[in-house]
Structures are given as structure tokens and as C-alpha cells.
Image (cartoon, rainbow, N blue to C red):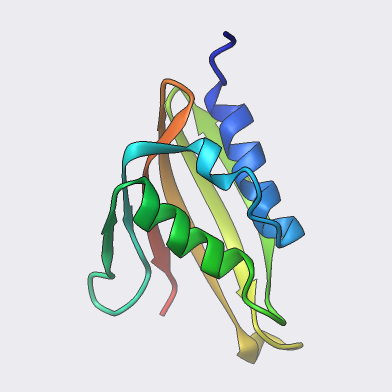
Length: 118
């Protein structure tokens, strides 16, 4: 079996949010995955385990009338940095810029740390 590279995993992960289609998301997430969400301030909520992480990312990916613009994606070894802008309206007053620090191990996402400009 081909072990997916970090770049492959992150590309598929980003596609979920671009298409608003979480099908296949669970196949990208490790059983022991940990997410630190951007809210609530100041530290964000911590989500542990595949089920909790998939549920959170599915809810974000399918939120009506929202979208992400990818600003930059950088991958090095098992780490990735995803810079984005999240929109819930038509002008910048209805958006926020942020970054996800991702870690992939053995072809699965094991960590996603989210930060926003506030």
C-alpha cells in the first residue's frame, strides 16, 4: 500500500473545504488526532480523537454561505502550514484571516492547530 505524502494529505484536506464536501475526510484523520480550534478565545477548544476531529471539520466544511480562500500552503516533511481567509459575507468585514499548523504522520493528520488574526 502506498503511504500518502504530507502534500497529498493536505491537498485532499484542503479540497474538502473548497468543495464543501466532507466525503473522505475520515480517511485522512488519524485515530489519535488532536485539533486546537480557533475559538473560544484565548486558547480555543481542544478536540481529541478521529470522531471528534472529523465532526468538527465536517461542520466547518459544510457551513452554508461560507468559503475559504487558500492564501498559501507550505509543506515540509510531516508539517504543513495553511494560510487562509474564511468568508461568511461579501466584504472583508465578513471575513477573518488565519493559519492552520498541521502535522501528518504515516499518511494521516495527527494534529491541526488553528489560529486567527483577531
